[in-house]
Length: 331
Image 1: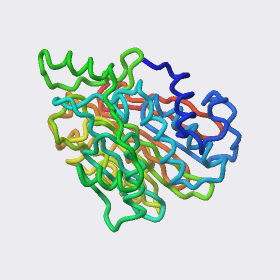
Image 2: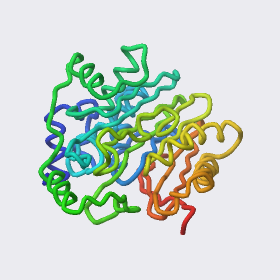
Image 3: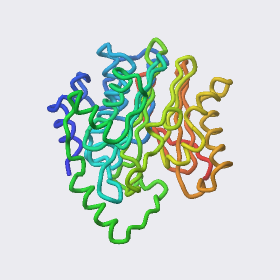
Image 4: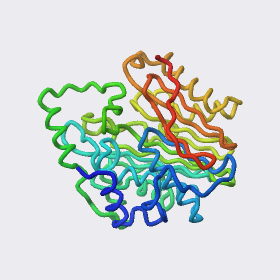
């Protein structure tokens, strides 16, 4: 398995980080030069968010837009073979296929997404092209793949030997029952990366990308590519994104709910908590599943809340990039 240093070196050689000058020479927690109080802000789900946040800040330093920043940030996670739930290296469905979902939104209210996409390393970039070059919001399956290939993307085998081994081990019992917070097992990363950014001018963007639940039914699509469920941005108010079991988020349109609650005066933290309480009220599956929300408003205030203990998120603000443990409903 590639270690993180080798992964970053490989990513740089492939050009993934070409828009992120200096990232490979810097500890993600150090040498961030933008010090303006409050803004910019970058917030993202789980510990893989530290490196993604750093990438977003480098884009801002290089003069990139907030949409550039959120796209290039999550591309780092998509290309990490040690991450078993996003991009290359993601655990496959029960039939052995790695299928990807992603979405992106900008401050102009435009959005793009792809779902059930196979053999493309960077679904978030395909989603951005859907947003930029088509009159649509979402492309799916073979149509999304055709669109990607027509726009210069190349097919790639996303099933790494490690993920294939895990799938074959799962096949022995074929027991489908996602375990809460198994992403926190030593040396493992699991679940969606959702990332939100506010630039120095208070413009907001967001991106969300995942390979979905491990060993899901072939054809299953989660909340991540669904605008309003896994991701929602309104430049007048703020943005929100979700992680965890997408079915619970889809049933409550969680990210849209968080933004609307902020529009009506809730703080980001209060809004995330109310969205979790809506799941508790509406879906009995909440007691054995995990969902987490993160949010940011136009002033750069952030918040998060989850169903279960164990959810954490990465926050860059005031020159510091750090991990924070979320509050949760079940303690």
